[in-house]
Image (tube, rainbow, N blue to C red; front, side):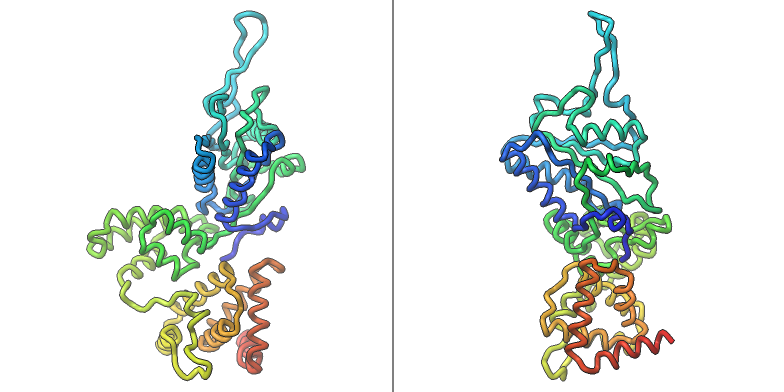
Length: 403
């Protein structure tokens, strides 16, 4: 799963969406409790469309309301459909020759003591609107009207790259106004959220087994319909509608999912629904349970299954399992215990070399020095230390494969 280099270009911290939510929640909570309200922090959350950036703003407001036991309001604006005139309009005074300002209902009132002002797709607004939003971000006020002290600002954007049409005003003044955080796609964070939000169990189990299906970056870059966390939530809703007779309506479900995920991803998902009774190997099973004993004499369920599909030359299935395993490693970063290292090594060695090469290929695509890159490198070193034959039986074969 390859993401944009935008955060590297700006030097932004990269976190999962759940960690960003916790950081913002905790900062606002402490600001209120310690009465540090004159110089409030404005957060700028950037990440791929559909990853849950807007959703966490509503969660933060709800959880802060529960914590403080009073209403924590939220006002969300969508920059692409608004102009400066939607916020304030001058009108002549009836008493003198001056003009006064009328403010729209987008702006928090004095009676709304605490809340979040969320500027969604901030960089897709026109220049005049962005400049007005800058005042809100930097000063917590609009024109001469100061927001109530208990209000905080969050701006949300997609990354400034070829996949999105934005009017980014990336100058020193704009960058200094906010604390910038980039959210990466995290299957684990999605699954945690899905469990709390009662997503359909079939969606949860599918993403658990096929981490790489959570976000389809390839189709997104090609301007096609693409799977993302937001569309999977809609898929979940559709499954609940047909929960009592799901198998009988699998054709309709495939059409509905095709319009959300794209027809190829929908077919893969619906094939999974049709075969829920079959063997499904979870990535964590490979890491923790791939070998049953120290002598490698017996196969675990996962290793026996891998061996069987290798023999059947079901390469597409092997690619899916490998990609899901790599995504699991990069996202969860399980402690490289000795058994996990042995299991990973044996899993790769059992694969055909042209497929196992995907492990090294993925490593080469990661940003040098990123946490994912460092983790996979450390795992490779551990595997090399574990087996004297690893270099000869794995790396040398990869070099020969490359010609």
